[in-house]
Amino acid sequence: MADPPETTTGMAPGDEVPPGTPGSGEDVCPRCAGAGRLHDAPCPDCAGTGRVTRAIGGG
Image 1 (cartoon, helix red, strand yellow):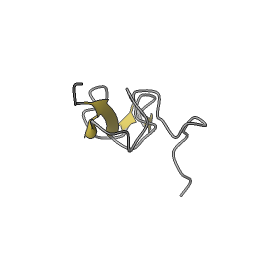
Image 2 (cartoon, helix red, strand yellow; image 1 turned 30 degrees about the vertical axis):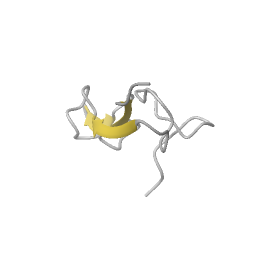
Image 3 (tube, one colour; image 1 turned 120 degrees about the vertical axis):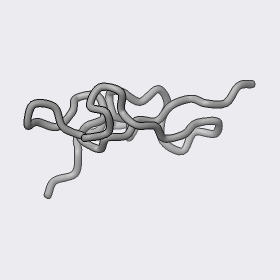
């Protein structure tokens, strides 16, 4: 099975910040509701993972 597509920053299109960023956390993808697929194809927002990275901290 192939890895989901990601950009050169390691981010899926629906990510707000790169994974591992301080003050961030993983959330269920709102577009596919965590399924990772839409209409028998990988979700374009989460790149098929069902998860997106969100900024949760403030500064």
